[in-house]
Image 1 (cartoon, rainbow, N blue to C red):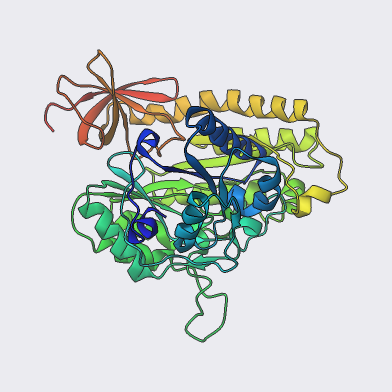
Image 2 (cartoon, rainbow, N blue to C red; image 1 turned 45 degrees about the horizontal axis):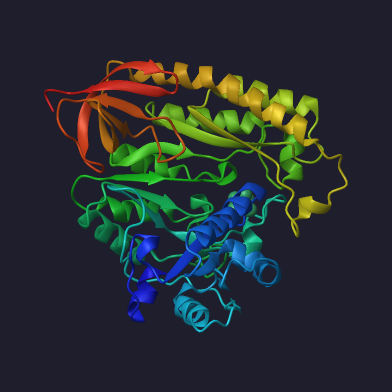
Length: 429
Ligand code: SF4
């Protein structure tokens, strides 16, 4: 969006204090994300009564027409389908029109150069697909983002090169489901869906020279492309870190979610990954409180959690989203209080599992990337390969030097502290 606006003569400033127009890029996936997006617009309006504020992104895509009537705090709304039209939204707001700019066609904006890195220093997100064909019954993303569209390998590799040359040490590949990457391209015999091309993409990224990490975020566990394990084994820069959102382990709940797995298939998946890559770190997310989820289903999930011993687990309570198949399911709804209790039960059990899993890193030497300094102390919050940005624990590193965000260094892990590691800069590094 920033690139397209710059091409139209607008300047990007990194402080809202200096801006004429504030664009709030929103999420409209679940209730809490919608609330956060709206709260951000409200806070911006309070702080900047005279500036133009545009609500852009998924929330505007999904509810722009309704919000136009009920959200006077925003001066305009801009959907997510074709970000090359951002200039139309900005012009309209500056002219005081107050409308929804809602392009009908999807555009991947492929080939646009990344003008500004908005993520933290040294780490960047690189989107390789947009949209999703999996159609999980609770999920609004296919409605908001449309069908799967993969970017060509050459375009992704060019952007990765650019990011790495520009100082990104960690490149996080993102999409709704990386395991579906390339299946929207026709296969060699012309049929669709084609094969998953994630292994081919990783092979291409492996050709880039230099020091960097490639981290894969979000692979649907029902179609994990096992060939990527070979890519990780062949090139340590492709991290053996796998984020596999399983959502549940009860086959009944998973079928209702339009997912194919169950506890045994997911245990087998985890075992196969760990056998091929003993250093593999596996993260998942669980969704509790789905319509029809019984106490028995929950206990099956807890049992799976204890047996799988995954490194990291995030838990969400079900959010009933309009226009999704689950919205109108007849199955008994789970009261929010019960869903919250189940979430708390999983979170509390996971703390001990995560701490125990972390013990295997004690005594090891690991490269880390610096996130920030702890003020007034010789301590730095860092991340090792086992810790993805924002969602996992951290490695707290003691160092007598002054380290800057984005910098990388080697450290020796001394102990586990809760879900974090404590380490000292390795003098031999
Ligand atoms: S795979 Fe993810 S994005 Fe796609 S429908 Fe399922 S939950 Fe939504």
